[in-house]
Image (cartoon, rainbow, N blue to C red; front, top):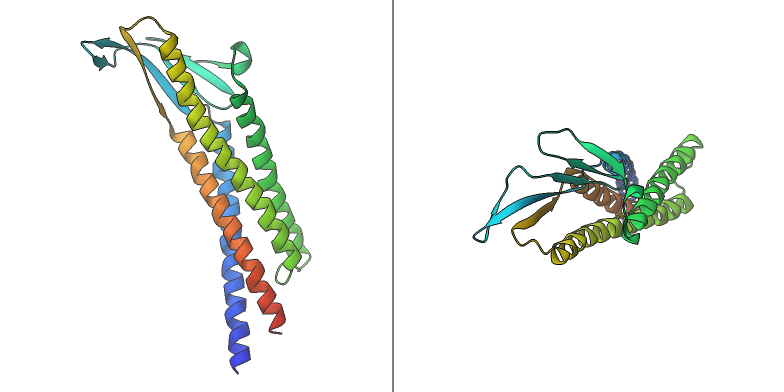
Length: 211
């Protein structure tokens, strides 16, 4: 009786963790894809400084993404260009490459899960759980490095631009925007998916041994 209850507990835990993994994986894919395609990762506004006070007047605004940047001149529409039109550092290329790699890892994890489910092996496939834990772990790590590199290097590039400018009557105000936040949320879901898959690996092994 006790062994039966133990198996039921492991089985229910396994099902919950599978559901959590799939839920996290799908949300990670969706949020990350939307964020990567968006040009609104960060923005900067050039404003005038009078008596040490920043005045957010009608000056040109710049919006940055992973693939392009957009300028919004005064009383005009958005003008967008890819980064090939300007000189940019390797950190942009790094974020671009890693974002594609992270998406491919997400898709690979989902396709592998779907393949195992179609072959009715997901419930007791320890090897599957080990592989998906590694795939999602790599995805979470790569996504996390993108967040850190983009946030740090974007701020640093604006600081360098401000230091190189001799016009002390103007100041650059900048902040990270919604797409950066959305990608961060996708990374959190990747971490949750990794942890749920890794935990499910041990739960499934115990479930197999209890039979």
